[in-house]
Image (cartoon, rainbow, N blue to C red):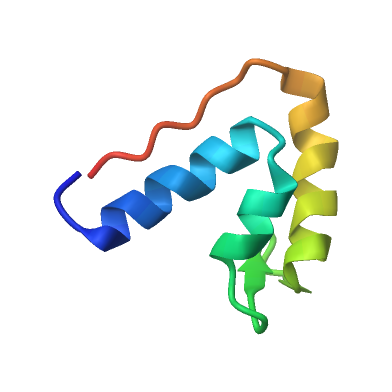
Length: 68
């Protein structure tokens, strides 16, 4: 990893893919807002987890590898 930002992104996706929600929560700020593809803001990491888990449950083993 080149810098702390790249590590943060890597750790975020690794936690999401691994359903490691405690780590995911520790990586997000208290004012975290997620914008889905339909530009509907989801406030808070718990809302994000609920939204993304519904999608990920259908694709177990799917991997998202960010390019840095």
